[in-house]
Length: 308
Image 1: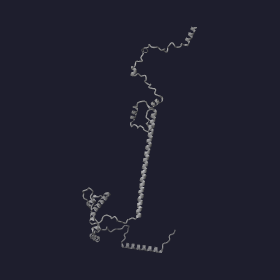
Image 2: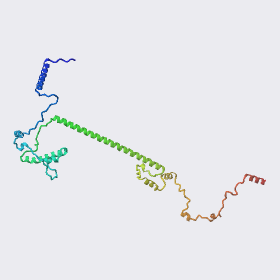
Image 3: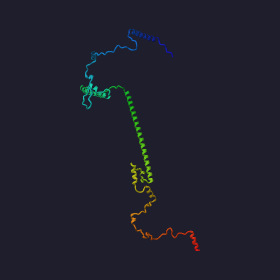
Image 4: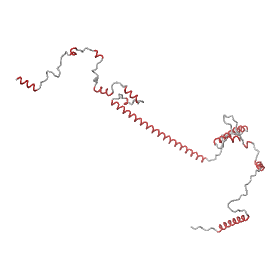
């Protein structure tokens, strides 16, 4: 796309300005005002003149002799610290005492200096009968409109609602995590109780235990020391639950083992003693080689032949 040519008036004006400029530069160069090179040569540093009389004259022009009420200026040091007996430092001492790089110390010095000014000025204003409190019907135009303040209020409310929502979500997550932990502990406790009940049932079936409290939910607390549980089992006396169950089902036949052992009463009782039995004079019973033994076959045949 071709650009349209410039008008004659614009080109003429640019050429005239450039000619004027070139002519001025040539005149300056011929007069020796321009030096060769890009650097500008300075003749020398400027000397500052301390015109004290001129400064006092300028100060007297705008200085006005006004009353203190119109000026309200006061120059004081910082108020002394609470409980401190040291006087307030002066300006030179204050510069040495306060580190300007310490933000907190610097702001505290400003605050204490403002306190000292208030304590000194308020009684003076009260003497001059100048009110220092805002009246109840005081109205001042706000720097910002009500619409803008309403937007700011809505923004603050939205931000506060978002923070509350985030905090509530955080609490819900914490409660959910705690509930899951409690649920896991309850399940583990149930599993331990179930395992303990199964172990107690097996002991009862095998006759190692005779208590049925686990059926009612009153479980025996587990002994802290395994030696205590072993001692407790050793100290048990009497027949086991299995033995009592069999005695109840089949009847109790009495004691068998050791029933023929002598006791003190049986040893002292001699009413059943018989001398004939004791010395072999009683009735003799036939032994294994008695006369009633049947003779053999050949002996019987011989006996038959003799009889013939």
